Length: 227
Image (spheres, one colour):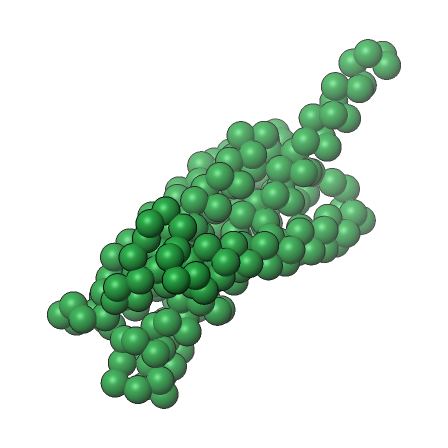
């Protein structure tokens, strides 16, 4: 009995660590794109003045929040049903990653640049929030009900640290140096936009354990239509 119990405990710990690591992965987007570097770049570069840029960015954030709110009943039903949550999580996460990459190549001087950048951002942000709905739905699969709050707190803490580490790398490698890493040019602020490539690579790399090692337990889905 002890020989079979040990692998199960090991698998559980690996799944829990992988779940927490997803928060580390996703926090790069939250920190660099949504909150600090790209949002600041957008407000200062895509409008006639920073105030107008801030208003535009706020509309983009609000629009994505409304879309997620409208999708919430459907997302909740899908999360409750189970069986395909990991597939939905992967689809949403990869959509966010792909559109974050696309943000890199929207230049302020382009025609309809602000509208294009905001449209790409809204899609990325909606996908980011949708992914977290499915991500959080795995909590009951990993720990007992009384431990859900503790594990959620661990994930948040690890994510907070991950966001800070990603921020330091972005500042040191892309934003601050006269010659950014990988020979990236500073012309037209491309080095600032290229931090989105760092976000995408970070998000992709560190989300893989979640997608590979966190399994959906049989019997966690609701039977019948969602109530």
